[in-house]
Length: 266
Image 1: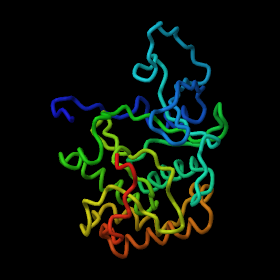
Image 2: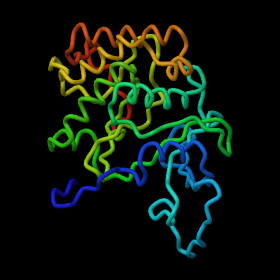
Image 3: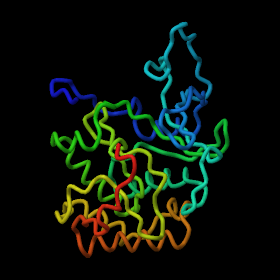
Image 4: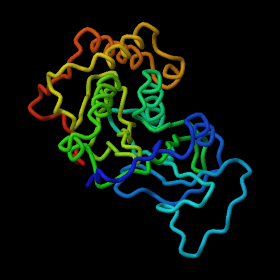
């Protein structure tokens, strides 16, 4: 559980955002293994700056928990490791990147930097690894009153992105005390398909500062970076959902008798 006496880091990541994105895009990638409980290929990787010298690891080295000096952990999701879905086309990794680009366009630092790469197993997404407290998740954080601003931002982002799979365990408490939303592949469907555990804000007003950011996004139009990742129907649906938040800035209720919950919940 959260320890209030633990000092917070300045950032959840070891590099400034621009340097981190450059590393994600250009770094040398070593695949360490598959993340547990993942339905698609979700791989823990180690990234090294291009041309960096690598120290010799000790015999008992555990890259998952103790990266070598100069290296950085990330999550790589290759497209060829995805299971086919009846309601989504292939290329869920592009939606991972689209979710980050949407959050970035809004100015919301709640999604770890995520980019497209051509990795060891082909094209996919690579996302900065959040070195967080994995005993915590949405239910424990909300109950403890931790990170409410971040949770509301993630909840609002999920409304815009039409997240079909926001599980409790997808809300990670970083070492900086911020909360980050991960596993964002089931998003941006043109049909309304929201499924989330984040129903505690029902009928509450969406904070004014978030609504202002959404209105700015609507006024500016969909960015080129998002256009490249979404089809025209998905683009139109995104803008319609964004306009809906501006017109009625309240968190919605589940009107389907509980059918809008993902499974498993954590």
